[in-house]
Length: 243
Image (tube, rainbow, N blue to C red; front, side):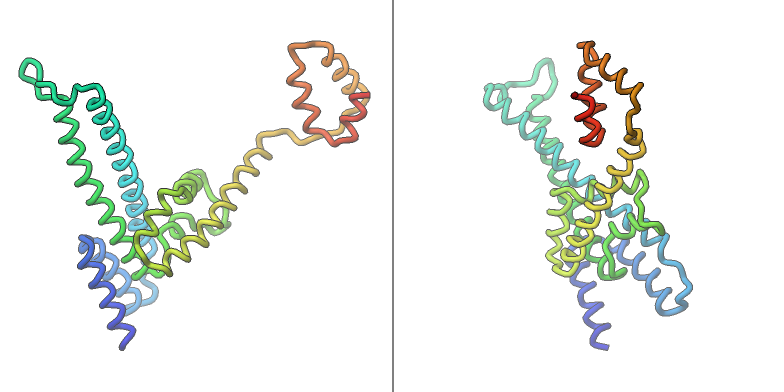
């Protein structure tokens, strides 16, 4: 019973701090159906939809932040040029004042998306007991597809990591850190596989090919190509060619 009370108490705190009532209600009803009515009730489709929306909102917050910085830089340039207090021309508003209004709007948008993302991060962890990235990147084979590789790269960035840390949930952060390290391995592994798939396998040169290479050495416009070929070969082969 105490566990149930603590669980609901934590949920109520999240709702007090963040405006995510609708998303929370959706998570609660799906999970409670699974746990209270029948374990055969599938929560994965809705869970993954919440995970995808959460990822999108984190990206949107970052995009809003970059836009804010761009406008802020433009305003700074205008002030340095002394054009920030010029009056509008032919009835049009001062373009710098318009930028200030846009900046103020973006601040409100930033606050909305950050609040929504943080609240959903906390609630997602509480209701489903896992990170949203683990849901988006799960595959039966363990190999990431093209779309998942893109998500993994974004989820591994520093700015994404900073947002996760704003939750102040140590357990969530620790699990995410561990998953983030695994993502790095998977991403690098995929890149290695891609190179293997696009670069021909290294082969041993026979005497005829060796003669061809020796002729290529005399052609200046193909020197770079030769170097690339030799760099792919075992040391013994390169020594033979240089003799």
